[in-house]
Amino acid sequence: MNIIDRIDGSLITSRVPRIPVSHYPSTCSVVSGGRKYGSCLRQLYWKWTGETETNPLEVSSIWKMELGNSGHLAIINLMKKAGFDFESEVAGKVNVEGLKYPISFRLDNVIKSKTNKVGLEVKTTFMGSTNSVRDSGPKVEHLMQVMCYMKFAELNEFVLLYVDRGSGYRMQFFLTLKDEKYYCDGKEIPFTIKDILERWIELEKALEEKKLPKRDYKVWLREDGTVQERKVIKKVINKSDWQCLYCPFQNKCWSTFDARDDCYTLGVGNPIPEWKPIGDIDEP
Ligand code: SF4
Image (tube, rainbow, N blue to C red; front, side, top):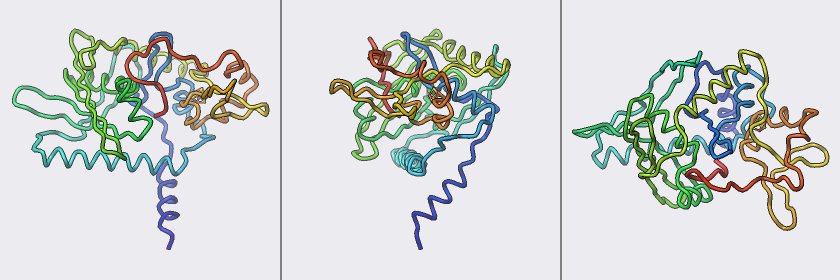
């Protein structure tokens, strides 16, 4: 009996890509400070049009996701033991002006107190991603996700909780919404829900016009045209954007005739942002 093979097989067969019928907070993106964060519109376009994945998720990645999910459940149980009163898996669907398709959401928990309700999103991290959050604050993708929950589930306060799966290191950030502005630990987040909605509007326009969006992210290409995870130039490591490295359409995207025009080239490497809004932009 090979347990690993059997679980691997079950994980692979249970993961069938589905064509979206809603926008989801996990597919948010934004342009802020001259940089793009979050989902690539070209990738979303291919998901919405049912394109076949050329680089499906590796089974080890599915294991990691499943272990992350079980970590969430463990934390929820700990909260129950600590006496928190909360609702789990709070879901909803809203229609928003300017968008043809609805936005669907499902947030982890809403903690109830005598006076108010506070949303909770739990993220498990590991090593590098833990250091990144500790040093720079929550990831932009997580802030966007929580901002959507706050807006559409009508919550003015929210806790974003990070727990490291290996060391048990814990961090929490408190988000507030006031006069359409969002704050993380008192610091104003430099983009708004409107900025996030604009990107979904752009996606819907591309779908309507059947026009493939441009690439939002870049990679280093080898001489033979294949994607290179990193390129060392004068002893400096230059990474391809992680969004492309994890993209299920990577080969399709970077094997076209115009790929060389869009990829990183010598002298035009992965730019170091002049400022970070809040949070790092490294790997998920
Ligand atoms: S490979 Fe990169 S640029 Fe291309 S669709 Fe995927 S994320 Fe977007």
